[in-house]
Image (cartoon, rainbow, N blue to C red):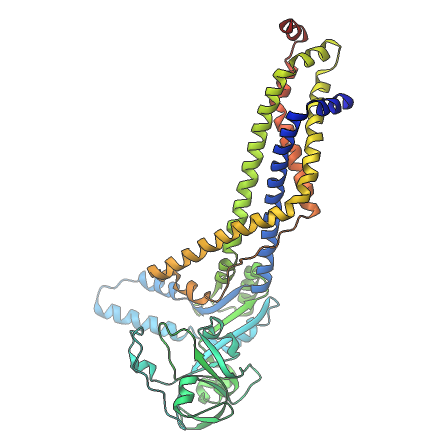
Length: 469
C-alpha cells in the first residue's frame, strides 16, 4: 500500500503538482488565520494588563429617578414634597473619604483618584477675564469665576489624562504634597506669576491660605467649556479649607472617586469585596459603575481582525473539503480500472481507501513544510492589511459619532479620546499553531475522503473490468 501510494504520487506529476499548489495555499491560509487569531488574543490580554479596569463610585441617579417615578403626583404639593424627598436623599448620598479608604484596600485596586471642590476666593491675585468662548453655552461669566479643585494626584485628572491640558512649566503633585497649586497659563500671564511664586486664597471663614505654584498648565483643546481660572490644589492643603463641620474629623465628603483595577476581569470580584467593606452603599444610593470603555476602544480593531481570521479559517476549510472531494471523485473516474484490478486481485477496499489517503498525506506533508517557511511573512502582511482596514473603519465610525452628536456616547468619546486603537500586531508562528494546522489539515483530508470512500466501497470489480472491455 505504501509503495503503491509513493509510485502513484511520483507517476502522476502534473496533477499532483496542481494538488500540491492548492494544498500549499490552503495550508498557508489556515496557518495565517490561526497565527493571526492567536496574536490578536495575545494583544487583547496585554491590553487588559496595561489598562486594567476603571470603576467609579457615584450616586445612583437612575435608581433615584425610578424610585420617585413610581410615586403618585396628583397635585403640585405632592410634586413639591417629592422633590424635597429626592433632594434629601441626594444629600444623604454623599461619598465619604472613609468609603474610598476602605475600598482602596482591596487587592485588585492598582490606583485611586478622588476629588472635591473647594469653596475659596482669590486674595493675592486677579482673575483672568475672558469673554471669547463661542462654544460655551453657559456664557462667559462662568469662565471668569474661580474654581478650585482638590485632587489627590494631578496626573490622574481627566483633562490631563485626555490631553485637553498639558503642563507647560513646572511639575505635578501627589498625595504626599502640601500647600501647592497648579494654575493656568492665562491666569499666570494675567498676574505675572511663575513657578515658585506664591498665591493666597481665602476660605469660607475668611482665613487666608498661602500656596506655592509648582506647575502651570495650558489648554490644548479649546472646544467646549474652558475655565482659565481653574486652580488645582493638593488634598492636604484642601482639607484646611474645610470648616470643622465639613471636615468631620477627617471623614469629609468628596465629589467623585475612581478606582483603577489591575485587571478588568476582576471587576465583579472587586464589587463584591467593596460591598462587603462598605455595606450601606445601596442604602445610601451609591453605586460602583464599571468603565471598560478604554479597553473596548483599544481592542476594537483587534476584535475585527480576530473575527475576520475566524471567517477565513472556516471558509478555507469548507472550500478545501469541497474542492479536494471533487478532485478525488474526478480522479476516481480515471483510476477506475486500477481500482477494479486491485479488487480482482483480492486487495481489500479499506486498503485502497488507505492508499488514496496516503497519497494525499504525502502531498499535504510537502505543502505543510513549504507553508511553515512562508507563513510568518505572509501572516504579518495579511494581518497588517486587515488591521489597517479595521483601524480606518473604527476611526471613521468614531468620527461619525462625534459629527452626528451622539449624546449617549459623549462620555465614551471624551474619556477615551486619548486611548489609541491598537494599530500594530506582531504575528509569530508557534509550535502550537503548527499542531493546530496538522489537526485541521488531517480533518480536511478525512472529510474529503468520505464521499470517494463510499464510491470505492460500493465498487464491483467485475462491473469495472467489464466496462473497460
